[in-house]
Length: 312
Image (tube, rainbow, N blue to C red; front, side):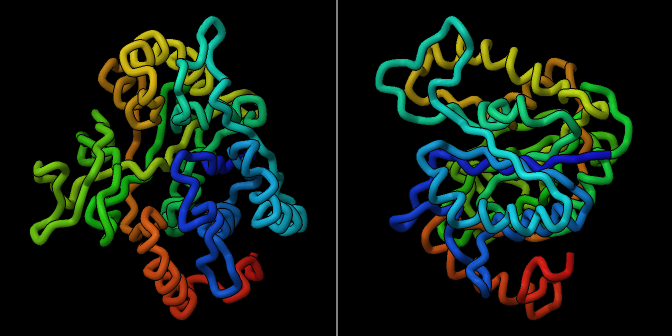
């Protein structure tokens, strides 16, 4: 079965240290974090990569990674496609609020790719390193037969996803059924590491709890559009009717928030695929040195080759 990796690379936090943070070199040969995600996805069995970017970064993106990865993927029989997230791409009958400059969020990023995805797909952030285990688990789940209302999520352990340099945003999960299914997801901002674990705005959090790192799997019948795309489109209208109406300049259409609501309404089920891999990423400028050293260690330990794609 064909399976797609969708990489969200159009986020608001794109400016980093005078450049585009998703395109910061971190590997021995100037690879970026996305290179490792693409490698791990292909190794796991994914055969299509979709980049969701903005038009204003397209030239930089293609120069930095797109053109190079297209050559690698062509030789491996992996398809490459692009989709573009645009502030003006909103439901018919609505308008962009005056003064709005903030993108609409991860839900709209995925929706931007609706015309290029016709197979089961997985979603990830461009600037997060997830580790190999989660890619294998999501791929193996996607090639099975599932109801349209089924979703899978790579369940990272909160303590493995914190930055040493400041607060992070995570979808904190409530689970049941022997820790195999999620019953709620709450997008939680400003989570910081503490001596005893983690907290968000003074509220203690369980460091062993599952969190979403925006690594989701959505099923589809072979050759058909994933049912979740229709849900995304319909819920985007509801988002404008409610969230945008009450907070026109800052409201965000976020995957964890949307999926959490669908769970509470009993419309969807979410399977947790636990991973013990340690996340790292470039959330803050100060994170880059740690990320560079982390990849050096992974290469030294034999997880990756110095010539990244040479083992595929």
